[in-house]
Image 1 (cartoon, rainbow, N blue to C red):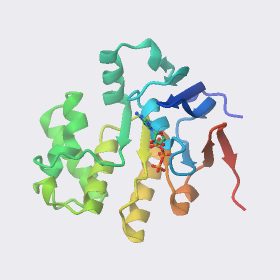
Image 2 (cartoon, rainbow, N blue to C red):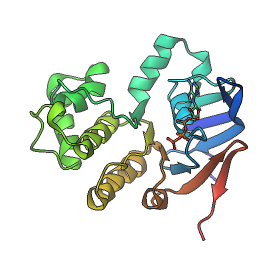
Image 3 (spheres, rainbow, N blue to C red):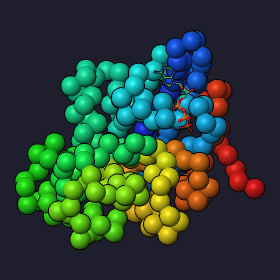
Image 4 (cartoon, protein in one colour):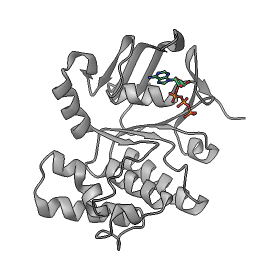
Length: 228
Ligand SMILES: Nc1ncnc2c1ncn2[C@@H]1O[C@H](COP(=O)(O)OP(=O)(O)OP(=O)(O)O)[C@@H](O)[C@H]1O
C-alpha cells in the first residue's frame, strides 16, 4: 500500500439535483500523486457534476473534498479561486477557450493569473502549444480553430502551470484517433512525470486504458472496474 497522503481525497460526498433526484451519496475517492484515474458511467449519472465539485466550481450537499490536504469547504470563495488557479488544471467539455485571444494568450492565461514574468509565460505557453502539435500557431486567433484544435488548446492550457490536480471531461472527444493518442500520451506524461493526480471522465475505452484505475460512477458511488 502507498502511505503518502493522496493529492485528492473525497469523503462521503453526496449530491442531488433539483427534483430531489440523487446523483450519488457516500462517494469516496483518493487519487495519489502520479496516478491517473478514469471515471466512466452512463450518460446523466453525474460525472461532469462530480468533476465540477472536485474543482470547487459546484457544491456538494454533504461530504468533503481535499486537495493536497486543504479542505475546499474550509476556504472562502477567494481562497478557493486561488487554489483552483494555482493547483488545478481543468479541461471542460465546452473548452472555454476565448475566441478573441490568440492561442498563445489562451494557453498563457493560467500563468498570467499566477503572475509569472512575461518571458517565462510566453516560452512555457509556446512549449505547451508545441506539445499539442500547434507550435506554429501561437499568433493565430482561437476563433479560427476547428473543434479538435480548440480541444488541444484547452489541454495545453490545463497543463501549462503544472497543476497538482488535473481534471478533464472527455478530453479527446472531438479528436481523430491519431491526435487523440498523442493528446492522451501528453496527459499521462503530465500526470506521471509532473507527479500530479489526474481524474478523467470518459466514454472512450482507449482513454480508460491509459488510466491506472477505471471507476464506474453509479448512484451508489464509485466502483472499481476490472476489464475482462
Ligand atoms: N443545476 C442543475 N439543475 C438540474 N439538473 C441538473 C443540474 N446539474 C446537473 N443536472 C442533471 O444532473 C444529471 C447529471 O449531469 P452530468 O452532466 O453530471 O452527467 P454526466 O454523467 O456527466 O453525463 P454525460 O455523460 O451525458 O455528459 C443530468 O441529468 C443533469 O440534467
